[in-house]
Amino acid sequence: MGYVQEARENHVKKKVEEALRSKMKQKALKECDQYTARYAECASGRMLSVVWQCRKQAKELNGCLHQYTNDSVLEDMKKEYMLQQEGKESIRV
Image (cartoon, rainbow, N blue to C red):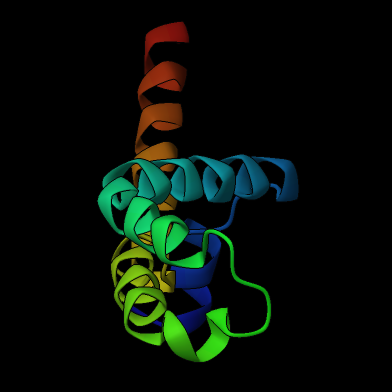
């Protein structure tokens, strides 16, 4: 499959893509809740020192979030959305 054809198949409207990104971020925050709690606990009561005192927790949180918020995940969500839309179209016909 050519790049242009693949791009056309995975193209969704900007509003839909924004909604999918939002959904992806919400899922990531839910899945990484334990890391968020650890980072928040470390950061509590700190100002500038949070940067170096909570580096480990921040790195763990970012690692977890990246698992759920990357281009590959977004592309999979777009494909799933397009398949759902195709299914709706076939029911209407």
